[in-house]
Amino acid sequence: MDITSITKTDWITDYTIQWRPLMMCNYDCSYCSPESHTLIVKSKIPTAEDLVDAAKKLRSQIPSNKSAMVVITGGEPFLIKDIHIWLNYLLANGFWVMVFTNGSLSEETYKNCQTAFSNPKLLFRLSFHPETSNIDRFAQLATSVQALGASVEIRAMLVNTLFDKVDELEQKAKGIKLIKLPVFPLYNKKTKQVNPVNKSSRYLKGYNQKPDDGTLGYYSQDELETLNNYEKRDTDPFFGVTINNDVPYAADKIQLLGKNKFTGWNCAVVSRKLIILPNGDIHYGFCNNEGIIGNLFTDDITLFDKEYTVCKKPMCGVIEEIMIDKSAPIKIIDLE
Image (cartoon, rainbow, N blue to C red; front, side):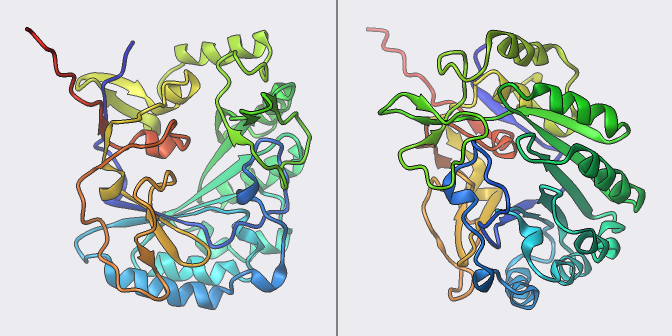
Protein backbone atom coordinates (compact mmCIF):
# COMPACT_ATOMS: atom_id res chain seq x y z
CA MET A 1 0.00 0.00 0.00
CA ASP A 2 1.31 3.44 -0.93
CA ILE A 3 1.24 5.98 1.89
CA THR A 4 0.29 9.57 1.02
CA SER A 5 -0.39 11.01 4.48
CA ILE A 6 0.13 10.24 8.17
CA THR A 7 -1.84 11.77 11.04
CA LYS A 8 -1.99 11.22 14.80
CA THR A 9 -4.35 12.96 17.22
CA ASP A 10 -3.86 11.15 20.54
CA TRP A 11 -0.53 12.57 21.69
CA ILE A 12 -0.16 12.76 25.48
CA THR A 13 1.07 16.38 25.33
CA ASP A 14 1.03 19.31 22.93
CA TYR A 15 4.80 19.39 22.49
CA THR A 16 7.64 16.89 22.64
CA ILE A 17 11.05 18.19 23.71
CA GLN A 18 13.85 15.69 23.17
CA TRP A 19 16.67 16.78 25.42
CA ARG A 20 20.09 15.23 24.86
CA PRO A 21 22.11 16.47 27.85
CA LEU A 22 25.16 14.49 26.75
CA MET A 23 26.22 12.30 23.84
CA MET A 24 28.62 10.12 25.81
CA CYS A 25 27.83 6.46 26.38
CA ASN A 26 29.34 3.49 28.15
CA TYR A 27 28.20 1.27 25.24
CA ASP A 28 29.70 1.10 21.75
CA CYS A 29 27.07 -0.67 19.63
CA SER A 30 27.99 -1.61 16.08
CA TYR A 31 24.90 0.08 14.59
CA CYS A 32 24.91 3.33 16.58
CA SER A 33 26.02 6.56 14.88
CA PRO A 34 29.49 7.57 16.17
CA GLU A 35 28.27 11.04 17.23
CA SER A 36 25.62 9.45 19.47
CA HIS A 37 28.01 7.57 21.74
CA THR A 38 31.22 9.50 22.14
CA LEU A 39 33.90 8.55 24.66
CA ILE A 40 33.12 9.43 28.29
CA VAL A 41 34.86 12.58 29.55
CA LYS A 42 33.69 13.14 33.13
CA SER A 43 34.60 16.86 33.13
CA LYS A 44 32.17 17.45 30.26
CA ILE A 45 29.17 15.74 31.84
CA PRO A 46 26.64 18.44 32.89
CA THR A 47 25.60 18.79 36.50
CA ALA A 48 22.03 18.25 37.61
CA GLU A 49 21.97 21.83 38.92
CA ASP A 50 22.93 23.28 35.51
CA LEU A 51 20.20 21.23 33.87
CA VAL A 52 17.63 22.48 36.39
CA ASP A 53 18.59 26.09 35.59
CA ALA A 54 18.16 25.41 31.86
CA ALA A 55 14.82 23.71 32.52
CA LYS A 56 13.59 26.81 34.34
CA LYS A 57 14.27 28.89 31.22
CA LEU A 58 12.51 26.32 29.04
CA ARG A 59 9.52 26.28 31.40
CA SER A 60 9.18 30.07 31.02
CA GLN A 61 8.91 29.70 27.24
CA ILE A 62 6.11 27.12 27.22
CA PRO A 63 2.63 28.74 27.38
CA SER A 64 0.71 27.86 30.54
CA ASN A 65 -2.13 26.38 28.48
CA LYS A 66 0.22 23.99 26.64
CA SER A 67 1.65 20.71 27.92
CA ALA A 68 5.09 19.36 27.12
CA MET A 69 6.83 16.00 27.31
CA VAL A 70 10.59 16.14 27.94
CA VAL A 71 12.18 13.06 26.39
CA ILE A 72 15.64 12.53 27.85
CA THR A 73 18.03 10.58 25.66
CA GLY A 74 21.75 10.51 24.90
CA GLY A 75 24.21 8.99 24.86
CA GLU A 76 23.41 7.54 28.25
CA PRO A 77 21.72 10.16 30.48
CA PHE A 78 22.14 8.18 33.69
CA LEU A 79 25.86 8.94 33.53
CA ILE A 80 24.83 12.33 34.99
CA LYS A 81 25.55 12.43 38.72
CA ASP A 82 22.40 12.99 40.79
CA ILE A 83 20.17 12.93 37.71
CA HIS A 84 17.23 12.41 40.06
CA ILE A 85 17.45 16.10 41.08
CA TRP A 86 16.76 17.15 37.48
CA LEU A 87 14.03 14.55 37.00
CA ASN A 88 12.28 15.63 40.20
CA TYR A 89 12.35 19.31 39.13
CA LEU A 90 10.84 18.57 35.72
CA LEU A 91 8.05 16.44 37.20
CA ALA A 92 7.29 19.01 39.93
CA ASN A 93 6.97 21.81 37.36
CA GLY A 94 4.38 20.50 35.00
CA PHE A 95 6.47 18.50 32.54
CA TRP A 96 5.85 14.93 31.59
CA VAL A 97 9.15 13.03 31.39
CA MET A 98 10.17 10.08 29.25
CA VAL A 99 13.69 8.92 30.02
CA PHE A 100 15.74 6.38 28.08
CA THR A 101 18.55 4.27 29.49
CA ASN A 102 20.45 1.15 28.51
CA GLY A 103 19.91 -0.10 32.06
CA SER A 104 23.59 -0.72 32.76
CA LEU A 105 24.35 1.87 35.45
CA SER A 106 24.80 1.14 39.15
CA GLU A 107 21.95 -0.06 41.34
CA GLU A 108 22.41 3.04 43.51
CA THR A 109 21.92 5.35 40.51
CA TYR A 110 18.49 3.92 39.78
CA LYS A 111 17.59 3.61 43.48
CA ASN A 112 18.08 7.37 43.93
CA CYS A 113 15.39 7.90 41.27
CA GLN A 114 12.65 6.03 43.14
CA THR A 115 10.62 9.20 43.81
CA ALA A 116 10.67 10.08 40.10
CA PHE A 117 9.94 6.49 39.07
CA SER A 118 6.82 6.45 41.24
CA ASN A 119 5.42 9.59 39.55
CA PRO A 120 2.66 8.73 37.01
CA LYS A 121 4.06 11.36 34.62
CA LEU A 122 7.39 9.50 34.39
CA LEU A 123 7.71 7.07 31.48
CA PHE A 124 10.73 4.76 31.81
CA ARG A 125 12.13 3.40 28.55
CA LEU A 126 14.79 0.71 28.53
CA SER A 127 16.80 0.16 25.35
CA PHE A 128 18.02 -3.42 25.07
CA HIS A 129 21.24 -3.76 23.09
CA PRO A 130 21.99 -7.49 22.78
CA GLU A 131 25.65 -7.03 21.86
CA THR A 132 26.38 -5.80 25.40
CA SER A 133 23.42 -5.99 27.80
CA ASN A 134 23.29 -8.46 30.67
CA ILE A 135 19.89 -10.07 30.16
CA ASP A 136 19.24 -11.14 33.77
CA ARG A 137 20.25 -7.78 35.24
CA PHE A 138 18.27 -5.92 32.58
CA ALA A 139 15.09 -7.92 33.23
CA GLN A 140 15.45 -7.42 37.01
CA LEU A 141 15.78 -3.63 36.61
CA ALA A 142 12.69 -3.47 34.40
CA THR A 143 10.69 -5.50 36.92
CA SER A 144 11.89 -3.45 39.90
CA VAL A 145 11.11 -0.08 38.33
CA GLN A 146 7.67 -1.22 37.21
CA ALA A 147 6.98 -2.36 40.79
CA LEU A 148 7.54 1.24 41.92
CA GLY A 149 4.67 2.33 39.70
CA ALA A 150 6.54 3.63 36.66
CA SER A 151 5.32 3.09 33.13
CA VAL A 152 8.05 0.75 31.84
CA GLU A 153 8.68 -0.20 28.24
CA ILE A 154 11.52 -2.17 26.70
CA ARG A 155 12.66 -1.40 23.18
CA ALA A 156 14.68 -4.39 22.10
CA MET A 157 17.07 -4.01 19.18
CA LEU A 158 16.89 -6.77 16.58
CA VAL A 159 20.54 -7.23 15.64
CA ASN A 160 21.83 -9.64 13.00
CA THR A 161 22.44 -13.12 14.55
CA LEU A 162 21.18 -11.94 17.97
CA PHE A 163 17.41 -12.29 17.65
CA ASP A 164 17.58 -15.16 20.16
CA LYS A 165 18.78 -12.82 22.92
CA VAL A 166 15.69 -10.66 22.43
CA ASP A 167 13.54 -13.79 22.67
CA GLU A 168 15.33 -14.76 25.90
CA LEU A 169 14.75 -11.31 27.39
CA GLU A 170 11.08 -11.48 26.44
CA GLN A 171 10.75 -14.68 28.50
CA LYS A 172 12.61 -13.27 31.51
CA ALA A 173 10.81 -9.93 31.54
CA LYS A 174 7.26 -11.24 31.32
CA GLY A 175 4.70 -8.64 32.25
CA ILE A 176 6.85 -5.82 30.84
CA LYS A 177 5.82 -4.22 27.58
CA LEU A 178 8.46 -5.12 24.96
CA ILE A 179 8.70 -3.75 21.44
CA LYS A 180 11.08 -5.32 18.94
CA LEU A 181 12.73 -2.92 16.53
CA PRO A 182 15.13 -3.66 13.67
CA VAL A 183 18.39 -1.77 13.81
CA PHE A 184 19.57 0.38 10.94
CA PRO A 185 23.11 -0.90 10.34
CA LEU A 186 25.92 1.53 9.60
CA TYR A 187 26.67 1.48 5.88
CA ASN A 188 29.48 3.02 3.87
CA LYS A 189 28.02 3.99 0.51
CA LYS A 190 31.45 4.40 -1.07
CA THR A 191 32.91 1.06 -0.05
CA LYS A 192 29.52 -0.70 0.10
CA GLN A 193 30.48 -2.14 3.49
CA VAL A 194 28.24 -2.68 6.52
CA ASN A 195 29.75 -2.40 9.98
CA PRO A 196 29.49 -5.97 11.30
CA VAL A 197 27.96 -7.16 14.56
CA ASN A 198 30.12 -6.62 17.67
CA LYS A 199 32.44 -4.25 15.81
CA SER A 200 33.11 -0.83 17.33
CA SER A 201 31.46 2.11 15.58
CA ARG A 202 32.79 4.89 17.79
CA TYR A 203 35.41 6.19 15.36
CA LEU A 204 33.88 5.20 12.03
CA LYS A 205 33.95 7.75 9.20
CA GLY A 206 31.85 7.70 6.07
CA TYR A 207 29.21 5.41 7.58
CA ASN A 208 25.52 6.27 7.95
CA GLN A 209 22.55 4.32 9.26
CA LYS A 210 20.56 2.65 6.52
CA PRO A 211 17.60 0.25 6.72
CA ASP A 212 18.24 -3.20 5.27
CA ASP A 213 15.43 -4.24 2.98
CA GLY A 214 17.44 -7.21 1.78
CA THR A 215 19.86 -5.29 -0.41
CA LEU A 216 22.59 -4.63 2.19
CA GLY A 217 23.17 -8.23 3.19
CA TYR A 218 23.04 -7.38 6.89
CA TYR A 219 20.01 -9.47 7.81
CA SER A 220 19.73 -13.11 6.74
CA GLN A 221 16.75 -14.21 4.68
CA ASP A 222 15.25 -15.90 7.74
CA GLU A 223 15.65 -12.68 9.75
CA LEU A 224 14.06 -10.63 6.98
CA GLU A 225 11.14 -13.03 6.92
CA THR A 226 10.77 -12.64 10.69
CA LEU A 227 10.74 -8.86 10.32
CA ASN A 228 8.18 -9.02 7.53
CA ASN A 229 5.91 -11.14 9.74
CA TYR A 230 5.56 -8.19 12.10
CA GLU A 231 3.25 -6.70 9.48
CA LYS A 232 0.67 -9.21 10.69
CA ARG A 233 0.81 -8.39 14.40
CA ASP A 234 -1.71 -6.28 16.27
CA THR A 235 -1.19 -2.52 16.28
CA ASP A 236 0.36 -1.16 19.47
CA PRO A 237 -1.88 1.72 20.65
CA PHE A 238 1.07 4.08 21.16
CA PHE A 239 2.21 3.64 17.56
CA GLY A 240 -1.27 3.92 16.13
CA VAL A 241 -1.64 6.43 13.28
CA THR A 242 -4.02 7.08 10.42
CA ILE A 243 -2.66 6.91 6.89
CA ASN A 244 -4.26 8.21 3.70
CA ASN A 245 -6.84 10.13 5.78
CA ASP A 246 -8.88 7.17 7.00
CA VAL A 247 -6.83 3.95 7.24
CA PRO A 248 -5.73 2.79 10.75
CA TYR A 249 -2.07 1.77 10.73
CA ALA A 250 1.04 1.64 12.93
CA ALA A 251 4.21 3.69 12.78
CA ASP A 252 6.41 0.75 13.75
CA LYS A 253 5.13 -1.15 10.70
CA ILE A 254 6.02 1.82 8.50
CA GLN A 255 9.54 1.59 9.90
CA LEU A 256 9.79 -2.20 9.67
CA LEU A 257 8.72 -2.16 6.02
CA GLY A 258 11.13 0.63 5.08
CA LYS A 259 8.33 3.03 4.07
CA ASN A 260 9.74 5.84 6.24
CA LYS A 261 10.96 7.94 3.30
CA PHE A 262 9.26 11.34 3.06
CA THR A 263 11.52 13.56 0.94
CA GLY A 264 9.47 16.49 -0.41
CA TRP A 265 6.58 15.92 2.00
CA ASN A 266 5.08 18.61 4.24
CA CYS A 267 5.88 17.64 7.86
CA ALA A 268 4.55 19.21 11.07
CA VAL A 269 7.68 18.45 13.08
CA VAL A 270 8.28 22.22 13.48
CA SER A 271 5.00 22.60 15.38
CA ARG A 272 5.44 19.45 17.43
CA LYS A 273 8.98 18.37 18.37
CA LEU A 274 12.07 20.18 19.64
CA ILE A 275 15.61 18.86 20.12
CA ILE A 276 18.02 20.31 22.69
CA LEU A 277 21.67 19.36 22.19
CA PRO A 278 24.31 19.10 24.94
CA ASN A 279 25.67 22.59 24.15
CA GLY A 280 22.17 24.11 24.31
CA ASP A 281 21.60 24.41 20.55
CA ILE A 282 17.98 23.84 19.56
CA HIS A 283 16.45 22.47 16.36
CA TYR A 284 13.18 20.86 15.32
CA GLY A 285 13.13 17.10 15.07
CA PHE A 286 15.97 14.65 15.13
CA CYS A 287 16.17 15.24 11.37
CA ASN A 288 17.25 18.88 11.94
CA ASN A 289 15.46 19.74 8.70
CA GLU A 290 15.38 23.49 9.47
CA GLY A 291 18.84 23.79 11.01
CA ILE A 292 19.74 25.34 14.38
CA ILE A 293 17.17 27.93 15.51
CA GLY A 294 19.00 29.21 18.60
CA ASN A 295 20.57 28.25 21.92
CA LEU A 296 18.70 27.54 25.15
CA PHE A 297 21.54 28.81 27.32
CA THR A 298 22.23 32.12 25.54
CA ASP A 299 19.31 33.18 23.27
CA ASP A 300 15.74 34.37 23.54
CA ILE A 301 13.82 32.02 21.26
CA THR A 302 10.25 31.82 20.02
CA LEU A 303 9.28 28.16 19.87
CA PHE A 304 6.86 26.27 17.61
CA ASP A 305 5.99 29.27 15.45
CA LYS A 306 5.69 27.40 12.11
CA GLU A 307 3.03 25.04 10.83
CA TYR A 308 5.15 22.69 8.73
CA THR A 309 8.47 22.20 6.95
CA VAL A 310 9.25 20.51 3.63
CA CYS A 311 11.32 17.38 4.26
CA LYS A 312 14.78 17.37 2.72
CA LYS A 313 15.97 14.12 4.27
CA PRO A 314 16.25 10.68 2.60
CA MET A 315 14.78 8.82 5.58
CA CYS A 316 12.87 9.43 8.81
CA GLY A 317 14.83 7.33 11.29
CA VAL A 318 12.98 8.05 14.56
CA ILE A 319 9.72 6.22 15.11
CA GLU A 320 8.11 9.06 17.12
CA GLU A 321 8.81 11.42 14.20
CA ILE A 322 7.32 9.01 11.68
CA MET A 323 4.07 9.51 13.62
CA ILE A 324 4.09 13.31 13.27
CA ASP A 325 1.51 14.64 10.79
CA LYS A 326 2.82 14.72 7.23
CA SER A 327 1.53 14.59 3.67
CA ALA A 328 2.98 13.81 0.27
CA PRO A 329 3.21 16.63 -2.27
CA ILE A 330 0.18 16.99 -4.53
CA LYS A 331 0.84 15.66 -8.01
CA ILE A 332 -0.05 18.07 -10.79
CA ILE A 333 -1.55 16.21 -13.75
CA ASP A 334 -1.11 17.83 -17.16
CA LEU A 335 -4.28 17.12 -19.12
CA GLU A 336 -3.10 18.72 -22.36
